[in-house]
Image 1 (cartoon, rainbow, N blue to C red):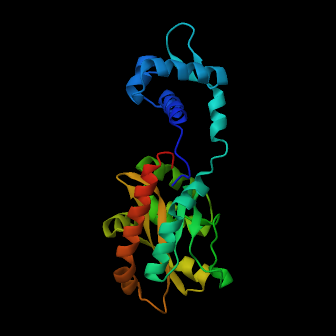
Image 2: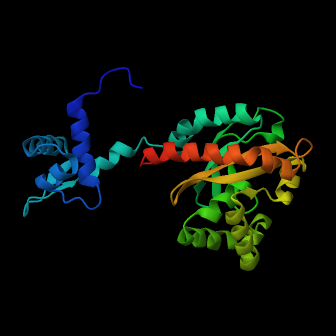
Image 3: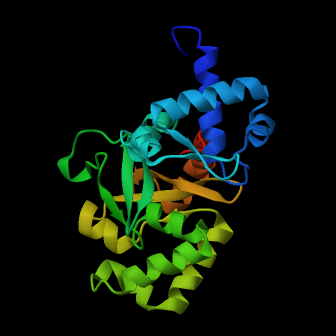
Length: 263
């Protein structure tokens, strides 16, 4: 909620600039008018203003307008990870209160899942996973949930990258049959689980997790997990108690992120 009423003229200028950058929009006065609903005379004045400011140029040979490289400077302060973390923070806090166990939200980043927000407590120390932690793809519920649901072309590229890394946590990438079986199982059951070897190596075998994708339609934004103590819940009990709420909050987060097309 903003503190002041928005400046309509400023919003219209932004609409014109967005239309110039929108795929499929013919960047003529008529095309921008059709895309924004702003009358043509106003579109012309706004384009002239943007040209004066250096953000737009007019093609000298035809009545077409184009954004300049200066528009790139408008995005230099954008940090997707921080933006997504801020968007999901309230949902994550409420989810922690609801289930009584901590969670992480992560986005895919080259070869790992980058934690952008976490509701883990500050202790014990070995349990901390602050924003910026990189969770491996093939042994964590975050990574496996994302891989099972992302685009096939993206998945193939990621797996090729991981297969070339000799770390033991990437062994599954070098066993295509076993990997595909694992991903099929995740898609069928609707969730991923942490690999027991990862629990032993990083949590003394005490903690386990369920993970689901954060996705709307076919767009996968990231993944969210729910951590729990194996001494408190069996794997079956965790699925019964945590999976429904986990999928629900993932859906809420996906809806919020889908509203922010830049995320």
